[in-house]
Length: 150
Image (cartoon, rainbow, N blue to C red; front, side):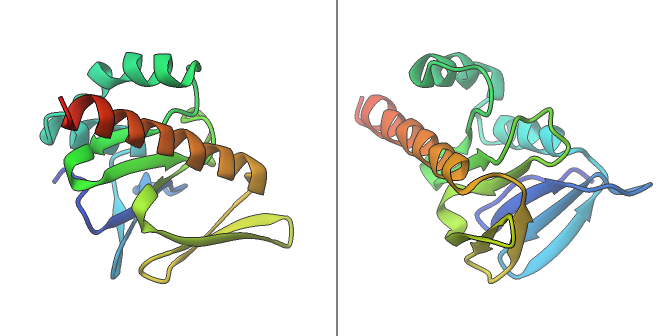
């Protein structure tokens, strides 16, 4: 069974296990999925009619960069995902922009508190995470001003 990101999906992270490849944080649940995170993201984008490949060039051009790009899973439903690192990095966590309650630095780790109360710990710096949030905000603004209004 393929997992499709939905409005309850708060974050997806790589999991090191013999069987499961992804840990999914939903609003009131935690799921363990066999597919890797990028496959889940790509399948989800396709299922909502926003293929990853069709947005990649727009996002790269808008942000003037080719890595650590946010992903628009379903913009009309507010499903924008922020990567904590490069998608090639095993430590990458994809966090839903609108499910972030707060974040802070504690004991050399960035702690992200999700709306459902779950806590994610990552090695990204506080400033780098703020920059990733800013980039995602720019993509949201681009989508609202150039796609929804036109």
